[in-house]
Length: 520
Image 1: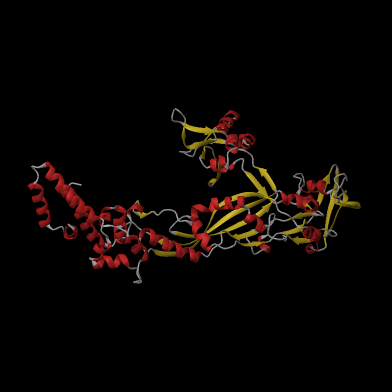
Image 2: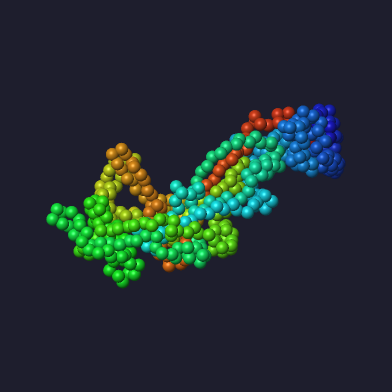
């Protein structure tokens, strides 16, 4: 019986047939013969498969060795406990041939997710964090400080650059190569690359503690002397200073204070001539505005945290809630079995948040200039009415998969969408598309999800408010992925162990014939 599996000997088939014919008139004898043959078959099928495979030296050599002639330990380990009966298993056949068919989808090998957590537990490192934030006095207003990132004077892309999670991607290349080998038996080729892509953005609330030592560096005599001088329009129609210098106060109870001057400076009513000559208008009076810097470096300080606990940059990356958010974003890339990525997290600290206008708010304001557009023809249609805008806002989003009882899409309004958690929002698609048209065609587009978004930004903060502002800060993160390479996996016949294909096909066919002969 064992020899039949190896060579399909016709004489063995003839003998089995004659034995069955000799007892076919006696049901007890026929049952006894089948029972004995079944016992022998079970014994043969339970023998180790490896010795049978080793008989075909060419196919075994390819299966049991790597390209460098060293033992393919993954394949040897895989086959060690396999029995002769396993030769009919699709998974075993696929492994022996060189492409495990259980992983093939659409002609390409699709592997199970890579266990990144297991890898990181063995090869992970502490996050590598670079941080630079400079408080600098506003160019015009005493004791008001800006902290926005300045790319021109910094070597960083933001206040924060962190390698997170931190590991040597060379280690990841080796471990993934082993994973592929152990999973499929393939010694996959590797194609190096160096492609960078921004994969996501996220805003995380965090409370930072500004040390008193930093605030003390800012608590010195103002680096600049700001004042206004009353001005009139003379007979020649030109502005002329006529009064004494009036200091700009920090006290809002004073007539000339920082807030009033800032509002006047930013006023849309200022003419180009007023801007050119540093003229502002407060009430019914004109003033010249003077700024005399003593040197920017006199009143600035880098934010240096004390320790690495909560409220610091290091503490931010140690915070479990923060880590969970970051890993949720990166995990889809981390578990890809045949691609190797590393990541850089770029962050900017913000203290101001505002909500952009919703589509309804935007369209109501701009209704006179908006037109319905035929998507198929691109032609301009009738103007939008308020009732049309209201209806669009009520049906601004539809669920990607859910339908109502009549089989129609499930719609929700802008207000309902805004209340959803971020993860739930991903289940909806926009039903509104706004096109900005210029003479050259479509200039830009914006869908309903982009209206009403919350935006965070840096702002100018009074010295005495800095500590509180940073206690309620936002960290705006951008995630940059670098793809270092990809393993070449294929489910095509060209990558199969052809000698093993021929040999295993014969073994599998003979085992199946043997089972049919015996009737099991």
